[in-house]
Length: 121
Image (cartoon, rainbow, N blue to C red; front, side, top):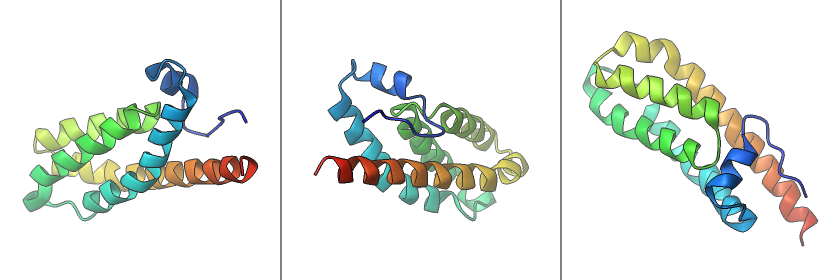
């Protein structure tokens, strides 16, 4: 079954694992389980939580990178840079859109994995 997931550059993702589909699938599954936890930590960012936000958005950036979720990775990178600079207004302006995008990405991956698993029983 071809891996086709909106928002994911599957070729880039597979390239990271030298074409090892099983390894890539493990990271897709990891994304589905870990990204919601990371996103929960990104909600309600404030001046007091900006330093913690940097750590959480860095994690979201990294896990997006290892599956080829390029748009999510780029946006997380921008948010991380703004947070490091103390630009709370900039973070607040983009944070909710990033969370929504990433949640949609998680749903797309989960949906594809469910179909994949059902076809490989």
